[in-house]
Length: 405
Image 1 (cartoon, rainbow, N blue to C red):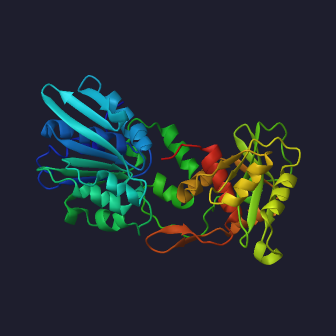
Image 2 (image 1 turned 90 degrees about the vertical axis):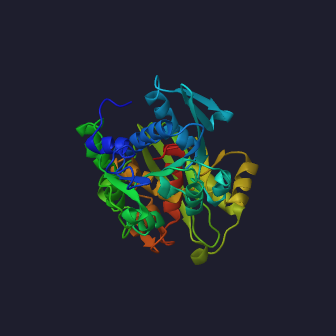
Image 3 (image 1 turned 180 degrees about the vertical axis):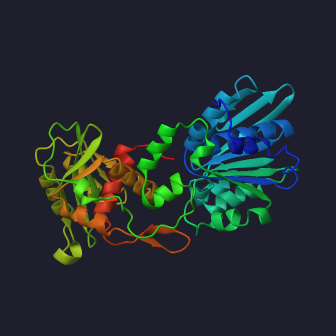
């Protein structure tokens, strides 16, 4: 897992044992760029500290979901700890028991995906907690996890990629690290010795705008202006479509008074082409029924062998209408806004998302889709966003599936 460590990674490994920092800090924060080597070394240090300092205690390892905890932390840890500790997974994999000689500790896995997640950890007594990607978890869950650390000598461990400088964790912990008794270490890709120069350069091409500043430069940058500044009609709009698509999908954002937007997509060699679209503004042109929208869906598809329709799961009545007719299979979309926007931006940056010149409404929305930041929770402005939503559904649900940072 590790061939060598950078200077900053060694600082993470040693902070709890180093006389200069051991008594000064009871928490550590590792934030910064993606692929900067912070998460893996923080998790390793957390376990080494727990096994060196305690026996018979319970600890928490938390992520956005249990799946992300296992993928990003547990599996790499099992490899790194092989031969050092005996590792046993119990209770369906949501509890790890580590043993060395007569020393045994328990590590519980938690997913902090929503406000209700705080109840999962309530009532426990922990000697320490690791919160990976802490900015993606509700504040209630994070604070409940911290409150559980009441054992003598307990410490807090945080990792994250930057978000908006209005985020509560940035204001309460990053900006007040010394006051909170937290050692804050800021990581860049150069702090990861396992990352080659070629890989670093590749990541620099994946992002632009606010995502470049956050994920590549590691800055806590505000989202402002155009959401997709990398969209360029001269690059992303094509007059002539290729042939021989491997699969076809239709993405849909349902609306009654708000616009109804649907796009027919074909994929070839990893590039997704928006072949044609349907866009109806109920306020401007009058409301339509689900049956009328279904007729428009059939016309959009034509004779194309569409694999499936991906649609916002809140469009229950239209989903039932489509299923009742039996022609199209329906897949409810993953409606994660910021990850979905990041994935669309990545496709645009890699020239893997193209639009036929006939798709005028999608082209218009790409050029008008802007951020609206209220200071604590950033989100797109609810204007010119209907084609943007269904394109995001395609990227998040079909192209990237279950993958996320």
